[in-house]
Structure formats: structure tokens, C-alpha cells
Image (tube, rainbow, N blue to C red; front, side):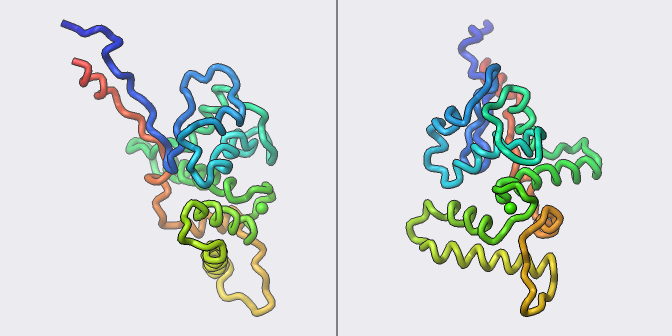
Length: 203
Ligand SMILES: [Ca+2]
């Protein structure tokens, strides 16, 4: 006998990496930043503001080169979700590279907070400090030196040997692609949707 439909738990969307819960899929009306800020699972996330901001970033929404949207609708929500699309075995190499580049672009925008196309040392420090702020054993100074070290590493990868008076002004998106070369962003930045096998549990 087939049990009543309500006995089946619907497949649900698990949290994004970094404990970001997916907003309700039936978000037919606009979602404001306040709604995201009130998501309990985000409360303890040290980069909550950056994650929430990324959903409203006009660059990610493909609505402009800078600025934030006041609210997002369901279509906007799908646009953002597309950045978390998993790499599919049916994709050809070109599609895989495009998918990877878009994920990195989304990530780049999280660092480049003033939308000028370059991650400065200050912006890099901000992200690292926020990331490590939840760890009471790491002093602010340590976070700063981790960021400084990473920036020097980025400069050496992107510019090579620098002259003593040469200044590295920051990481461009092309630099960012170089830095992430060989690092598997594909499996780190996606949402896994539970497949319909979940329904089998309902029998
Ligand atoms: Ca910048």
C-alpha cells in the first residue's frame, strides 16, 4: 500500500560550503538582505556579511559593474545558484573551464569589495581577518601576517622576481586565475542536490 504523500520527506538542499543554508526555493517574492541576515545558521559564520553581500552583488547578478541590489527575486536567486553548479560528466572541456572560471569570478568578487577589479592587500587582509576572527587562539597580528605572506606569494606567482622599489598593486582577475591554477575549485564550491533516490526511502 502506498503511504500518504505527507509521510515522504522531500529532497532538500543541503547547506553551501561554509554553512550557508540555501534560501527557500519557493522565494517567489523579493528577498532582502535583512532576511538573509536573520538566517540562524549564518549567525556564527565569520564571513556572513560577505556571503550575504555576494547574493546582492550586481556583478554576480550580472546587473552592473558595481553596487548592490536592494532585493533579489527568484530569477536572481537562480543566477546566483548557477555559480554553484557542480561539474557534470557530460560537460566538454570548454564547458568545464567556463564553469570553473565563473566560480572563481564569484570568489574574486568576495575579495574585491570595492569592485575596482583588483584585490588590494587591505582587502585581502580584511577577508583573512574575518575568516580567522572566530578562532580565539589567533591574534589579529597573526591574521595580518598570514594575509601579507599570501599576498607576497601571489606577487611572486603573478609578477615573478620584483625589483626592490617595485610595488604589487593587487591581484587582478587574471592573476587570481593563475593563483588558483591546479586547485580543485570545482569540488569545493558547489551545492549537492540529493537525488530522487530519497523518494525510495518513502516506501
Ligand atoms: Ca579592490
